[in-house]
Image (tube, rainbow, N blue to C red; front, side, top):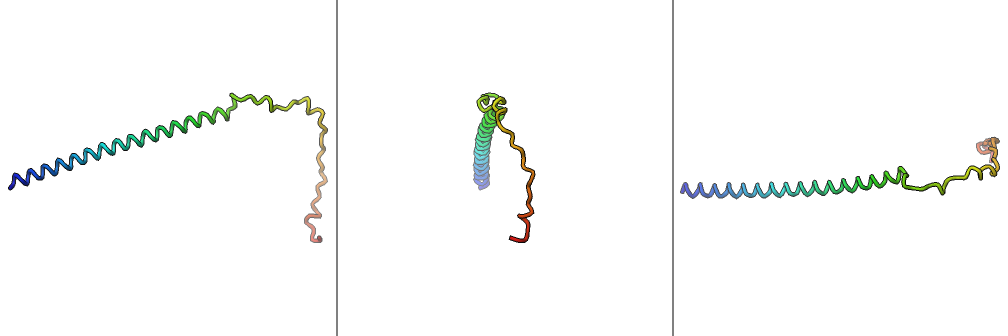
Length: 95
């Protein structure tokens, strides 16, 4: 009877140990998958950042077509500001 009890206990311990080993391996593989996914997402973010930096620095863009010709500005008439800005009528009680 004692031998049967010991045998059952050993089988139970072995089964539990095998379950723990499988779950540990499963958790490890899940963690590795999560890490790989996070690394891929970070790589995508860094690629996007590098692309945006090229745009912001503007070294690859030719913007000379949007420059203003200073000689053409000489022919434009200067508009003098009107300093007579009276708001008394706007705040009067009579309307």
